Length: 318
Length: 318
Image (cartoon, rainbow over all chains, first blue to last red; front, top):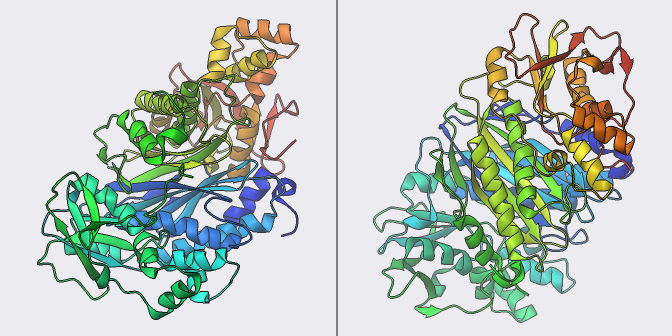
């Protein structure tokens, strides 16, 4: 596909984009109609939306269009999984300058499609409009399969805190990229293309998780929302986290204590959940802390002390 | 609310935005969690998404934030209605410069909320990120209540074409605004705040509509999609449209034949549907043409001839 999206035109681009999309059994009306129709067998639908902007959430010189697609899909599908639901569908709003190479848009769609396939979902619709900056707006839908949704507000004193998925890998990869390096590959790849543990979300709901979120802004920052919503104190034990040797090596090379990546790094879309103490967790979950009764409002500590090392990310912060 | 969104911060803004939102019975988990959970009693969910960009889809000097919200919601909720579904929920992706007055964002949300209320839906979630231009990305969900979705591809030769809602009013209002006038109010208001005939969508599905869309880009342009998807020839009769006297007056004042607004004007989100000839239509529907067997591919004509007067809107066109 030669040329840019301006030459292809709105409808030409939509035709090319939708021609790449398979349908799943859950899709009754797919892309190309006024709206999509997707199965919601549970009788409820889980829905979440995120916006990614070039220069802020991705850089075209650091990530391919395909990786941006994988990542944009992953972060939304992970939100669905964090509710305890199985992802079913994804919608795309794409803002693009007329000069954007058409291949970029098509590879973005390939990335969305392939990440959806990993999670069992399908791209079912979207919108394409012209703007000055590339912007990708995603909405993901999911099905609870009869389960109770796992919300932020359910953590109870005495619960254990457990994590599953990659923690700090994306942040370590970003640190590498920001210093002009392209390796170690595993970390750079983790930054470019997170691998959320989709299946662990519904499974955690089944196991009786009392609260769950995916880690997008950093573990401590994201747990802050759980602490506030559940009105509890969440205490993490730094020594209980897994800091792989390779991560320690990079940390040494770039002068960062890798526990900062693990506790404050976002974008891996690992899952963190609270479970009643008596629940036997499968080995994919690692217990890293405990829910305490709050002395004062909801808060998060590490080994009993406040954690103040670059905890997370406020989009309007400097 | 004084100050701008940068001063309020991401989480402060989200807190203010979500505090304005009522829940409906359909909302099990509303704004503020990882994802929303919305009733989908039909066992399927209708989903559609649209992106609006400042300078392209709205101007802050021509429309208030409240009106942008009403309009952004309306165009998505109308898509849901055009499938024959009842709108249930709406998600917002908001891109905003840090300098945007916080009141603008809050009034936008008020507009979304109030338009949702008209359609029976609720704002259930969203995302807020910083960017250079104000951008509003909306996803709307709906429930089919057991009906078959009405798609673009169902029009059959012999069907009649009928419209309901306002046609050409928004375009006439835009013509007035573009010339620096603020009246006649009815047209300017129609441009600022469309009133889609939400209830007519599900009702049309019930009456046996064979195809349906809402008019966003212009009647002839949008019917082009129906003609192509259904592989039929759609012929409109210009004389059967209602051109109100006030619209004729403005047309004369600005030198535009008002039938151009009616046939080519977008953004009113009127509904156009095809029905089997024998269906008795309630008075809100106006029959304006007929579905013919195509001599060649799908096409749309007016009184048997091609319609070439500014038909619609390609976002990448010049």
